[in-house]
Image (cartoon, rainbow, N blue to C red; front, side):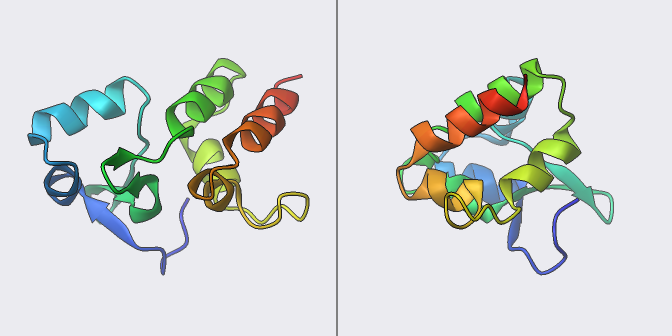
Length: 112
């Protein structure tokens, strides 16, 4: 579960930021390119998952690695937003900072 103060976007806002129709955002969620959770009955996506021009580089691959290792959506979200002193910061901050290889290595190690 995401922190209540974390900036989130509903799917219409995600579609607007990505310049896509909402049904394409639903497809991104189904394909594991993005993750969402329900807040007050509404699906929301963390704003940090988006960068200029699209989804943060490395996020879809990281999600895939963690899902293939048996992690649930809630567990993946928790991990992405939990401080990791070895990065430093959170995995999502590292992905946004173009340190995707480090994040993916940690995700792969968690699967073993």
